[in-house]
Image 1: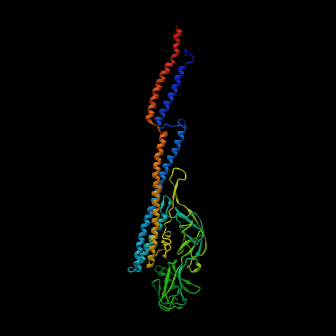
Image 2 (image 1 turned 60 degrees about the vertical axis):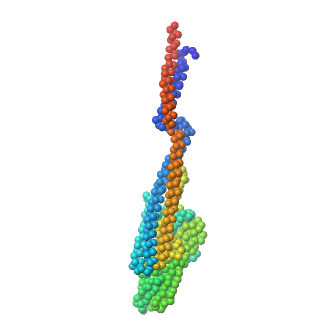
Image 3 (image 1 turned 135 degrees about the vertical axis):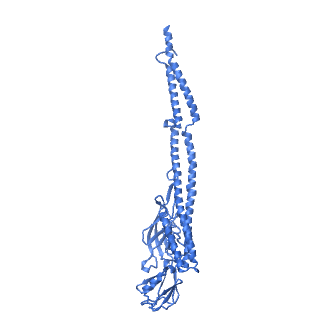
Length: 474
């Protein structure tokens, strides 16, 4: 190439390479100072897309791990309350066993035991009502499967995780009945003599001069021991005895020491007995199991749904209503936890209502429909109460087992897996985006040397036009 002045191509070449070196050095400095080799889309478009997706996953994984931790805290709050209910039930069972020891207990001791039982049941209901995580109540049934009847004669008691959401028609085919006995003779005048009426093994002394209303009031004073209530048939002027409880486990045995007459209680000296009848019917068109006045679906979509059937007031409160009783709408309000980094990666658990009216349901051969009904002032009541309390303990321990399994096998296992996934995802994102300082420092050193060399070479290139002066000087 000839010597020229106007266009110094070697200088342009030196400037071009120096600009490239300067840019590479600046980029190397940026990577070293930021710690990232991908700082903008131009640094690696495909790598940036993958990296940002992984960053979203990392943020999601971190939040999912935190969510699982919060869920564990909620479950442990519920389990702690259930543990206390369990302890109270064990105390109640001991009291029932004490009352069943009829040979050493008098009526005062039995009444004291029943008073303590009542306090225990009130405490259980209080725990069920007030236990909450933050402001969310977790044991009152609002965190489980709920049922809403549209008929006032039907009361929702409980549903389980087996109960599918939906609307279920309730039809009563056999009325539940209390045991009932009506006096054979109407008492139309005051008692002529003192009389002893024995009801379910309890002797009730009736004093001469008592009216029919006073006789009934005296019988009702002993309802806690006999499980029997006296009512008046205003049409026939006869006294009607009925059990408090419904079903085949409820019975009455009555006998008087005076012959039936219009100036006696009217029951006579012959022993009279009667036994109640369990309710029968269908829930959602499928035959359900009846115990007392409680109907429980044991199969079909409504499985686990328990309802109490109301009383037909036209039958001296002796029978339940019959026929179609509207619908029960079941909704699943199970607690749902977001335990994954992406949409719909959730887990849920239903926490059943643990009030006394929802525990100890469907105990065969018991005169009590649920835990709230137990009365241990009689030997039979104490023995039946033990059965109901045992069922209530099973209900609570099963729920505790369910929550424990959910915590261990779902929440904690998922959190452990999420931590492993987080570690690997962070590692993958680091490979794509983080600066390799060993490599980058070597590049930085290279570019520093190239920059210094480029500046020196450019200076020399800029001296080439001056060589023409040597020619002009000659």
